Image (cartoon, rainbow, N blue to C red; front, side):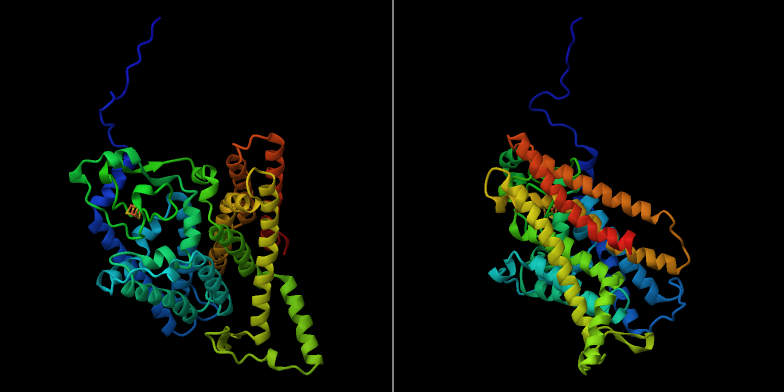
Amino acid sequence: MEHIIIPLFQPGTVAPPTRLQRLGDAMRRHRGLIVGVQWAVVVFYLALVSIPAFLPLPPADGRMLENLTLFAQFIFWGVWWPFVIVSVMAVGRAWCGLFCPEGTLTELASRFGLGRAVPRWIKWGGWPLAAFVLTTVYGQLVSVYEYPKAVLLILGGSTVAALAVGLVYGKGTRVWCRHLCPVSGVFGLLARLAPLHFSVNRDNWNRAPENTRQAVQCAPLIDIRRMTGASQCHMCGRCSSHRDAVKLTARLPGREIAELPANDAKAWEARLLVFGMIGVAVGAFQWSASPWFVAIKQKIAGWLVDHDVFWLLQDNAPWWLLTHYPESSDVFTWLDGLLILAYIATTALLVGSWAWTWLRVAGALLPGRARDNAHWLAYSLVPLGGVGVFLGLSAMTVSHLSAEGLSLPWLPQIRAALLGSAALWSMGLALGMMRHTPSIPRRLMAASAVTIAVAGVITPWLFLFFLW
Ligand code: SF4
């Protein structure tokens, strides 16, 4: 029997827009609604950041529904941050483009500011790593998860910096978000996993009729025509259907990484992932639960007392340098501060160097330069980095809910499942990235080296959640 194939669309006809495309276009059309939501978030955020800092500390038996400070803590660290991480992995950086209060404020400020060109020092590729490490470590020293004055200092300070950058640089753009925001680099890595992105059809772009060519102002300063991934896109929708070339599109989760050309890998992004998002983050989440930290501290404190060195045991540092809340019996000595720094630095170097070494081994087994291959293969660890940060932040969610009397008996299983899935996803991505390597034995040996790197990344989380 002869089959007749009826083409769905004749050449030259235009396919009807998909639902996603229509969603992207709706975001472009309903810009006013988005701006309204952004300003509501700004007001909510400013209230939660500033008001608790001027209230007395909550009582030991306080409840979050009765105490604004505890409520703000839960919203920031128990809901906001962990689920922003999840959202970036799920829908790209829509958080940045649709909700982030700092993005809204810096863009507004830059509309009325000096409009200066972005200088070279701001474009330095190491800022995302430096800013992430500094804010993470400083947050631990001043106990940002527990005290509202520390929240005002760190989050409020970041907002003031975003405003200042907006007032000086760019015109209606987000120079702060693109180059300096402490979480922009992390979000840029995580967005590569997202199953949604704005794709650009270069042929349609070039063929677009003159009357559709009016430029779109992309706030995070993306060259939209050449955009090939979701890393920098804030998913604001302003360019949806521009030149009939930009469409909100679905893709397989992680496909952008599996198909990442080796020469698109950036050394600073790889360092941010391996030493910052994986190394520094696990050290920061781990030190307060670590029996090793306590043992080392007791040993050093004993030695200091035996040798009459008491200044390191004093707790006279101001609250903005080291945690200092005598009314809550929570004060850090200088020794505490130094040991926190040493613990985070050592963990970051041990875990990061372990992963880096095995990525180098894997890179040496593939064609090309070992170092460049290692930078490229590092992107396969993005799922582990993202899940690690989510699990670390969600520990705050868990402790807040426990304090409210909610028990979570299935928590260990969920944590194990998330870590296991992230590890498998990372290994799968590495295998996908290496699929064009002609030699199968070399590919397998390189995959084994990545597996050893993955094992080293998971181990500190196993200690934190299951062994201590
Ligand atoms: S490319 Fe720019 S304008 Fe287009 S959606 Fe992304 S952030 Fe918005």
